[in-house]
Image (cartoon, rainbow, N blue to C red):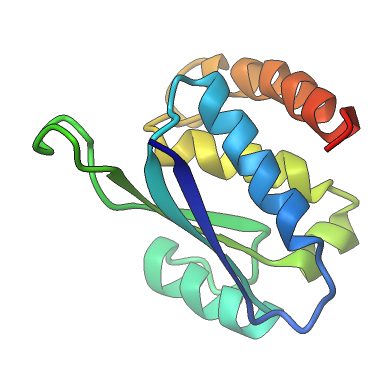
Amino acid sequence: MTLDVEVENRSGWSVDEAAAAAAVRAALAAEGMTDGELGLILVGEAEMADLNASHRGKPAPTDVLSFPIDGGDMLPAGLPRQLGDLVLCPQVAARAGTPIELLLVHGALHLLGYDHETDAGRMLARQDELMQEVEQVAASPA
């Protein structure tokens, strides 16, 4: 089984799509998720502002949004999980100076059910741990 990351870049920015997908895979694998499918969509600021307004009631662009699809527990054996979509705005990330890999790890944790607004720091601590693993994967030869 594999973890399939489908990347679509609608942002107009040049992003290393293979490295982005590898960062998501590394974060999810570290959480024990090695089988499933997810979409990684890179969008511009206007599209991100529309999504943020529609789904969170905040009419401004943000750096990353997560849209989980399933909980995984109810799938028949042998079917890959449909984890959902991560939507990332490279422009917002660049302006804030936030590494895209950090946002991908953050979004991946949200897809797995973590919520930093309610978990007393658990998600952000795990995010820091996973960033070390993602950085090791990025530094290792292909």
